[in-house]
Length: 266
Image (cartoon, rainbow, N blue to C red; front, side, top):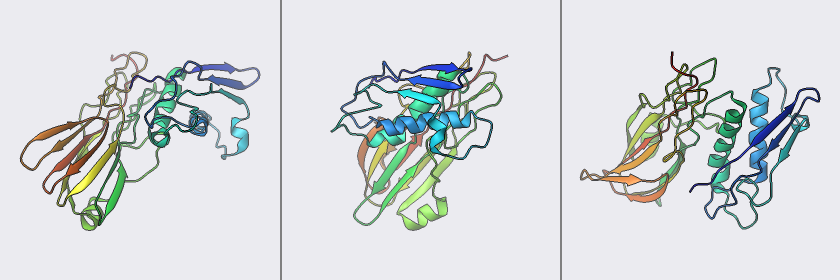
């Protein structure tokens, strides 16, 4: 929808403090991608804790040397009755990638949790799908992992097929979806689920139009892609956010984004 997250980071080494200013970020949206200020602060805390070499337990003092400026009414500090369901699972990922990019330490990850739900009157299921991690000056991005503001596991194929009327037809690395560079970004995955009963599928995902950025000459990762393969062979292209009715024999195909690369290729 064209919304932007803008951040300025100032670090005072003598005072051992940092100022994180989100002035210039887009106003709150009519969609549900608005993120409450608490989500934004959690993302800032996550990033700076990962940059500290010491093993510091999570406590209120972690944010004491950090000043966070979030203007009123942008997507990162919306006012009632703004919808915010995607703020925690999607926009938080954008905040993290924005901060790492501004600091120049890590290329963008897949930047989305690829939220998928399906169900009917008899059963309901929710999963998030892994993708590519961003590269840094010291390492390649990992393939097929959950990154940053997500910590969920995915159901074992045997358990999924035992408990729900579906068949997991494909779950594999999406080759060459990570951005090239001196250190390449991690690859996303391809996940194909065939339905054995009528279901309603809902998808909440990002980076289907714009890829996760590379750094220092590294290339961006590939965008994600959502589609339906009908039982009769017809293909239905889906956007990043979609709700669609599935019939027995239809398949859902999710291709998750790759991470960005870091540095020029040698």
